[in-house]
Image (cartoon, rainbow, N blue to C red; front, side):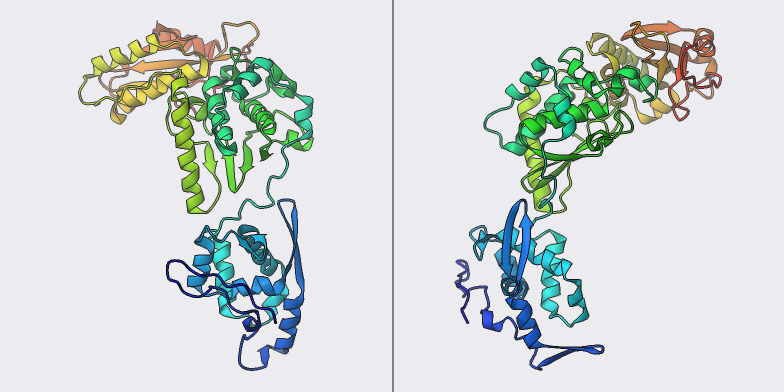
Length: 468
């Protein structure tokens, strides 16, 4: 019988990690392997070994003799580790190493009938090694092979937006790094629609039509999650990056409902992109502040793959810092300023910024967290995002505003000391408690959700859907 080619370990100068083909079926000294009422001869296993396993990996078809798959699965742990980790071993039997090991895993996973027989423990050990995805990462194989979807053929992006996003991609980045760059750049450029947030993500007509994405520009940059998802998918398709999505519109179903994200693949990397894990603290905000992203996540279980992905994100993020549009919140010692100095700092930073809409409100929340202690946020400085039914623009149903409540003593113990302010369209106004209560009573203001934090000292009021 033909023997396998021998390979030598340069470090130890030991003979090949391979075993000879004629040794593959020396499974036990006895000629029978008895399992329950069934007996199977070693000749039967030899017949299995003479068969070929046919598999397609990312569009490439292979027909691999089972004896070759078994030869690898019978290796000792030390030799198997060397095989997986040695970058100089890039093929097995003229098949790419990772494709071959994926085939070996799939073969035993599919041939469940083998479980009726006694299999050498070493084979199960090697299968479990492969299943862990730590020794070799083939988790992405045969996933997300399409980068063109029917819905993408029916929509177009604003030409200036599309040209800007694609032309700004550095040429020296690989495909995954370009996908990361696009995501961060879009997060820095676009902002969540404050009207859609104010109405608690209920139906807004323009957002129910996928063709609306063509009206989203570098200046008219308000989006919701499924629009970001659609625009990002369109750009990834231009790069021929394959993807999948939770958006039912990609399956020909209704568009504009629920929370949507995108999953895409580049090489061995499986990535989930969700720019709105939180409206007020998702990546549409965090990217502008150069804070760690929480919506761009490597889904691979392999720890080395995850580490490589994080390194790429950091590398790309560093390239985009020059595009930053927000100033970083102050990193201050909260004990170094008294309460009144903190108030002065908060209002000054709010006045100096040129951010609008959800970006502005998110920035205020970031400032609140940076400037005031947790105890002060509980007892002395509260901020509540509300629905404002008197938006500045006639084409809006509502917009988002913020109520700031201040008490230099304690909200609960001294409610008569509460002072109220409202940020409307980025401008600050003071209100008496009576004036504020009246605006809730006549439905000018409303809580967006019943779960929203309530304004200290204000009587309970019902959430409203629209201003009658």
